[in-house]
Length: 233
Image 1 (cartoon, rainbow, N blue to C red):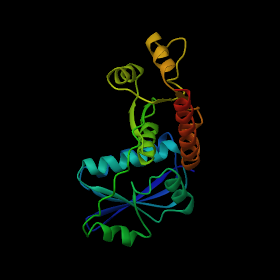
Image 2 (cartoon, one colour):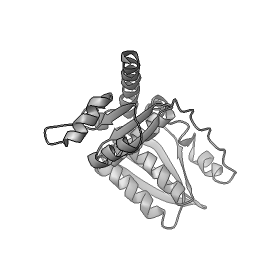
Image 3 (tube, rainbow, N blue to C red):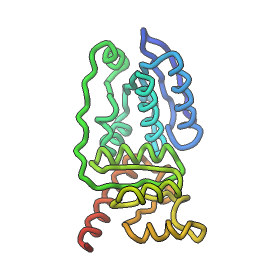
């Protein structure tokens, strides 16, 4: 089912009702474009997710970018009527403290009319993870997922920039998307860098899986790889 967006204004708040699936491709792009258009004149936005049946990793990354864009515009984003399956995704990916979610549109709108409550920042473990993928939505999702889990997560879309980052600061682990994994065409310097630290390759299915399941499985894999790397040292 394609994603449809129904928008209305309630006082100084704009409510966007989402109906369908928030997934990689046109759905994520349309949500980002729609909010970008709204931000020309409105900056207090509520996403009603009551009719959203599925969110994949790219879709959740798009929502993180929507949140960032509203705050860059000195506004904010709140969620409401979050379905059980979407709520579980947010819990599994530890993003419940990133998004301000409310039971109803009324409560979400009311939240804009009272002082906000600051969110406690996650305690960092000190482990640094570099994420390399061409999909900016996946990168946005990975950054928030890992930061909520306590990792110092940094990201880039380009192999050359990943090499630059690895030259200027140490990393404990490299996450690589399917189209950025080392191949015969990759620079030798990238192959050498990948040989010096643990590497986890994200399969082509990662961005289209249920975001909660994909995120939980990835966090388990990361923890195991870092434990094994520590034992080897």
